[in-house]
View (cartoon, rainbow, N blue to C red):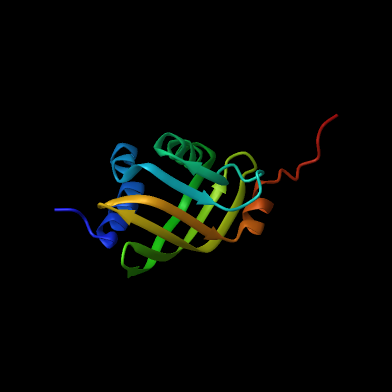
Length: 138
C-alpha cells in the first residue's frame, strides 16, 4: 500500500531526526526537487533537482551546520501536499554563528514519495549567520 502524503512527510522527518540518510533518500523520488530560497552565501541555498543533487543539499546539512533544534509543530495536509511549520536552531560551522528561526516547509508527494520540498525561513538571518565578521589578518 502506498503511503499517504502525511505518512510520506512524517517518514521524511523521522529519517532526518534519526540521521539515517539511506532511509531519507529512499523517501525521495528519483526526480525530486529541493528548493531553499536564499543567496549563495548560505551554504545550503539553491534549487537541487534530482535525487543525486538532493544528496548534495543534505551533505551541506550534515557537514556545514550543527543542528541544535529541529522541531515540527503542525502538519497541514491537502491532497498530495503537506505544509509543515516548525522551529530550527543551528550553528554554522564556518562562522560559529547561531541561526534560529521558525520555518514553513511545503512538501509535495506522489506514489508515497517526496517529489518536491520547499523550505521557507528567515534567509536574511541565515545570510547574516553565514558571514564571517572577523577582521582578516593581513
